[in-house]
Length: 323
Image 1 (tube, helix red, strand yellow):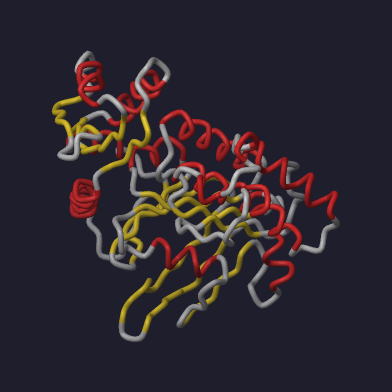
Image 2: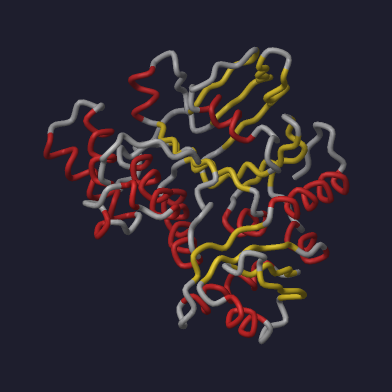
């Protein structure tokens, strides 16, 4: 993917942006100037992350305020949507489509000929490492594969701005590491990469800047230093889906990263608590390469919710910011 040509305005700017759904608050009084690089929107479910992404991509119009994306607005949709890629967290595919069909048909909307669309489709599919599965129907894909084919579609037209809603959700540890490396490539090409997540340790590792949201407000922005140390003081609970949870438990306790582990009630996974999520995920990468089939690794929502409440209360929320 070639780097985008220089543009006069490189910021995504939101000026006093609010969005209400009737009397329900989506986001309120958002003022941001987002530079190129990897920016993570973080917060518990219902904090306003997806609403903010839909506003930036022009899928929603603000109740008040204005939005400008690198000098572009959705009022010029042909230019705007050639330069913005959006990967939602929701599955929606035409019935019977293969992975290749899904990416190729999207590219045809831009008016390119068959050869150009075919070349771009395969290039995007290769970047997410799905060539072998591209001719199979998406209905037979795993959750992680569906996530990756959506990402392939979002990057297939070489956008300047890439908006990704929970892009790491459902990926196994090895694919997760490959996908994070891909985000770094996009960032190195001078693009905006905006990611929503509720996995704080990943955000801390990959982000150039972080925007912490709660109840529709921005409560912190900038480089949130010390997030890793805060996490270490507050154990994070993780659910691992795998083929041999008992064997995994014995391997996990060879490390000092885990303070508790128990087999999930359905027998198909392991619930663990760790004070060092960074080291724990690196350990899971090694385990996945050595005999235990790991399907997914994901934080448990209730635990993540309590962690955000802990960080927000400690950081002095209420619509302020810190760097």
